[in-house]
Amino acid sequence: MAKVAIIGASGNVGRYTAHAVSYIPHVSELLLFGRPGREEVLHGLACDLHDSFAARGSQSDVKFSCTPKDLEGSDIIIVTSGVPRKEGQNRIDLAHENARMISEIAAMVGWYAPNAILFIVSNPVDVMTAVALKYSGMKPNQVIGLGTHLDSMRLKWNIAKYFDVHVSEVHTRIIGEHGDSMVPLWSATTIGGISIQNLPKFKDLPEEQIMHNVMNAGSAIIRRIGSTIYGPGDAIATIVSTILGNEKRILTVSTFISSEIHNIGDVCIGTPVRLDRNGATTLTITISEHEVEGFRKSVDKIRAITQEVIERLDESC
Ligand SMILES: NC(=O)C1=CN([C@@H]2O[C@H](COP(=O)(O)OP(=O)(O)OC[C@H]3O[C@@H](n4cnc5c(N)ncnc54)[C@H](O)[C@@H]3O)[C@@H](O)[C@H]2O)C=CC1
Ligand SMILES: O=C([O-])CC(=O)C(=O)O
Picture (cartoon, rainbow, N blue to C red):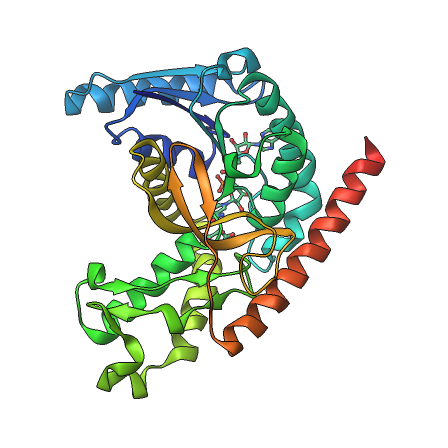
């Protein structure tokens, strides 16, 4: 049985994540964690979740805390603390502001729960994953970010709609930045195990329109309701469940790569990894020439921003 902590639990994503994660059978203790001053809100959320457990007949326990020592013994720590973007903003616009927060949280996690898996959600998630890796002092397999997992699920859903098949028949993924330079892997997309290029309807597939929908899904939701909530929460819960169940599923999360994809690396970015109780193992893969070109651009962009953000953090330490 496992203890899962959520730092930033009082926010939109944090509170729905707590609910989604509470359905995972391996989770015996859920800790809602926040900064000092958030006790009342966290207490209220914990009481509401208790009622949810009561309604479901669940035996799980939910606690709240603003005391770092309470993170001890956590198996997974999910970080949803941070400023969300507003309409018209890009995720990268949040980099410097959120990096300070994430560096402090990562140092706290590295100290109190050095054996946990540290799972970053805060945006820009690839840059924040690198900041967390550096300031936690934890090993690369222990530090992951939500990466392009949610984007991959958005693409999968769009493809299933177009081909009019059950969503579970579609296997696809997006790699690279969780942002404008993301790269869909059409070369690795199958329906019912058949390469998408071998299906008659592929010739009319509106690739550009689909990728436009996927890339703008977050901003379109933010424009209407202020933030994305259920999509990220359920995507996070899938990853937590995969890790705690030692399932060894291949999901596309942000993790440190050195040179696994066509010798491109030295960055934290969305790539296919095998997830189990030890965290992430990066896969070495081959992709098409066109995809390599896009991935290289995405990596160069994120590496440059990461370096700038970490240099500024180091200067101010
Ligand atoms: N990677 C992804 O796919 C997604 C990432 N996000 C990101 O998650 C983050 C949270 O989003 P929301 O929950 O919508 O925001 P929110 O504003 O509803 O919640 C933010 C949380 O961060 C905490 N917080 C704010 N300033 C803090 C500080 N200085 N120290 C510690 N905690 C602090 C707040 O108390 C609150 O719990 C944002 O950065 C957002 O962009 C959101 C959705 C999906
Ligand atoms: O778009 C945002 O800012 C939130 C997010 O990352 C997403 O839902 O993909």
